[in-house]
Image 1: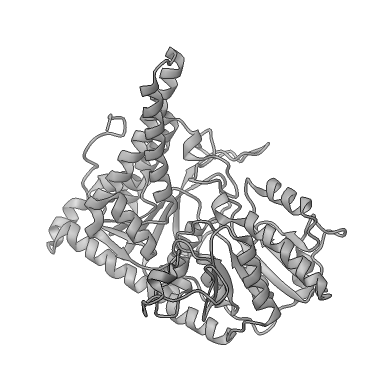
Image 2 (image 1 turned 60 degrees about the vertical axis):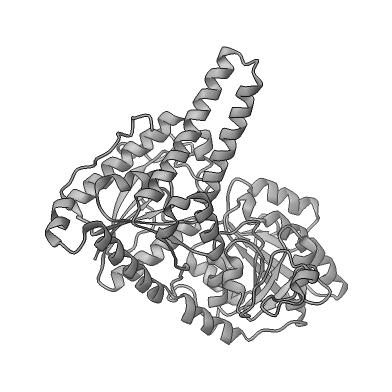
Length: 505
């Protein structure tokens, strides 16, 4: 099968980028052809051998950005900031948005002519996938969660602008600004609807996400298929040994006197992710203060390593400094080889997200054979809950206590749960996060690390999950073309139809 991946973002530095790279690796491994259209501000981005890449060029935020033919004069936008871009959809104007669309329209047409895909796999229910639905080809879109956040935000911004307009007393300049903002957010809403309605199938990655999508796009609810994210077992797995000295010597930290990670620790906790507010890193830092104080009472040395970067980095480092943390270290953005080694050394991973659509880093951690402490939010419980019972975000003893299908929280807690893969804690609760981490680090709660790794490989290896995705592609192709192969050939040469990107939708 010839698969055209269309993403509005890079293939690295964020969860969706990691996912499409992992999928592409396995597709190519099994003799499928893949072409990826992606946004980038550099030409030396990581590439999967055998995959064709089509770059939508942007301009990096640096003193000497790389000059790329045809690059847009601004950086690639995200729903939240990226590790290599502070640009978001919210700080661009509609003309800039349409300039991006024009690039994607040109790129997709180019690859239809040269690559001749059987199916388009769009990433995020957003503008670039709306463009992909214009060409008469079968389209499957994967929802990643931040797109749903973006849709909700657009609706909320329109409500605020309407309220401001109704309040009156606006100057002509204020009215002009309000109209420009309203046009932009309305366009976001309409393009997201177009993407959902024009796709043959909509892949969601968690039950929580399925519910959200169906509430926001009820007209496309019958297209929804749940397929959990996968990981590459070749990159994330249990290692027989790790050269800790060499690994730590290769990393730097600006929070130690010698710029290196300390090697004389008793236990190690690890966070991996981009520095965005919804990741909850500030809650982890607060919990680390409690952890260090508790460990110090026992004469123990707890090491906390934070991997990643982003716009919040100065604030997070200032928070750690103000709290007087002695052994929390930021080691910057790292590749999978370094992360795998850190995960094999770590006693646990921490995922303190406020709203995590899936939580790929959860299964990357468990694949390396250790428990995870994570929040009971978004798609994380779908991964962590191996109990066979329902885990609620707000457990009511009076109502839920008599329901045998609902799991009660751990005794003495308001909402902490222990499963075979680790522990779930309430969102934004640094005390509960600290308590769960320390119970594992102290050995009060123990896990079978080999069983954790084996379960993860059986359940989430990308090879098994790609089989599900390929079946969905086949369904989309048949729905789009029917069983008449000649109709398929006619459609492959068809030019885009429908309203122009410049039309007022």
